[in-house]
Length: 117
Image (cartoon, rainbow, N blue to C red; front, side, top):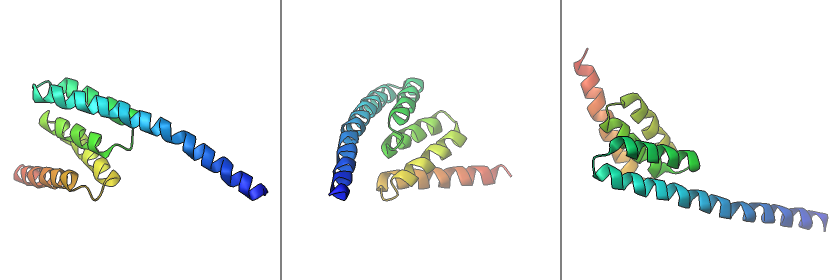
């Protein structure tokens, strides 16, 4: 009986954490969507701010890290772009879009850095 009560307590704890996660993801998605909107208008600094906020709100949001990486790359901050791509890939290793973006980033930047040597 005691084990059953402990199990139920764990379920209640996990169950009550779910709405907080859902709220965090929803808030982060709002930031991501706003970032996409401003990036499409060429406001990359504002987009970066929004995507940085999204990953602060939900550090498990792979797509937000991907968007952030694209923006850092666009702005020429390749070190930050690489870190963000790596985080996105680590969080969602089977996401084809994220993997393609990262592979293209590496291909272009590895070729560019070899040309400088």
